Length: 118
Image (cartoon, rainbow, N blue to C red; front, top):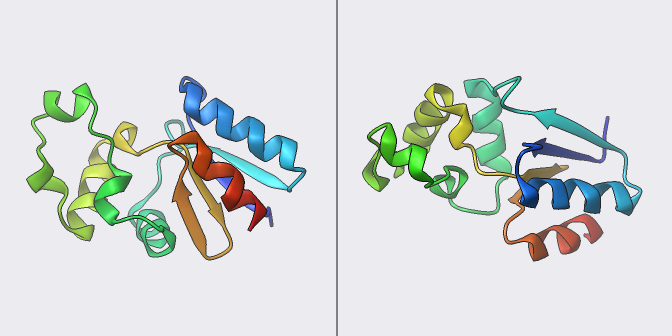
């Protein structure tokens, strides 16, 4: 089992920077291309259990968020977050790093190094 799992989008510069930090750390790691292999409900709930942030932080508020008609009211609860991410995997915040029983959203970029060193 890998020391660190990174939910990665190679098109995102912040995600690429986090992956470079993981690789430089020397920790054994697994890269999950979540847009090619979207998380199921169980995996999203497990991720939320480990996340240091509030569940709603796992959802990106980018232009696509409003294009599909979503508002902050649609992602207030844990189950709303799960439902939105199941329907719209591209709204998963990125990158997300998982290590043991903890997970963080790797933005801003300066959150990654302390997480890897812990």
